[in-house]
Figure 1: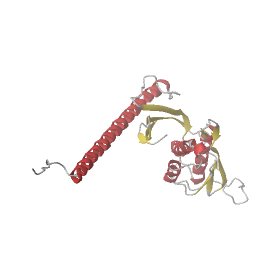
Figure 2: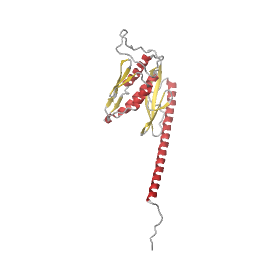
Figure 3: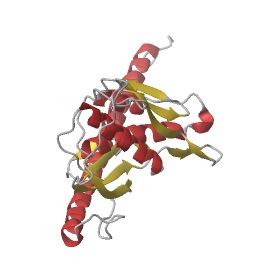
Figure 4: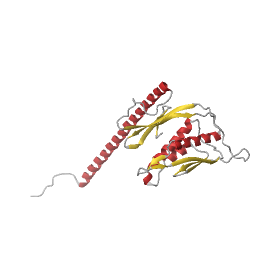
Length: 258
């Protein structure tokens, strides 16, 4: 009697089936992850909208923003709300080029003085990653620290933001420097604009200038400039630090850190 083989799948057919199943599974996973990110992003933005509403109510009640999140503000599941800060900033009008540079330097140094340049190493040691904002002549400003950076005029807004966002330390022991630099430059741009500054910054001043030596002299800022209340709150998706948004006193929700 002749042997008869029962009909079945060939090896090639089995491989094709496995590949198709793998592709379908990948598509499902990608779709699920995309839907999850969208849902979390929507939740984060909704939380920030609640923050904006609550902070506006506090301002109407007390004529200033609180120094922490109002008690009624609650974060959604997997969302962390970070209160970055609040206070009052002077708002300067009709700045000339040199005064614009002075406001930029002031915004920068105020952040250093407030501790925005500090971070921690992997071992928990406190680090001063940004230590000051120096100005030596009318064509540049230097942000000093572990990685000092000279900013020649014209200083563009996007260049500052890109530098902070793309900064990567070469020292894995001080990986927190990446976060500090991103936050510092984002805050510097935001604070400069909140104080009435506009981009590009086209001039600074010569620290050695006198009325007779031809240097560009610093020009006084309005000591009676009105103040404007400000705040900034971030919403971050837990475990996904790239998903972060913030809201300020403008009520506008934007991507990225404060």
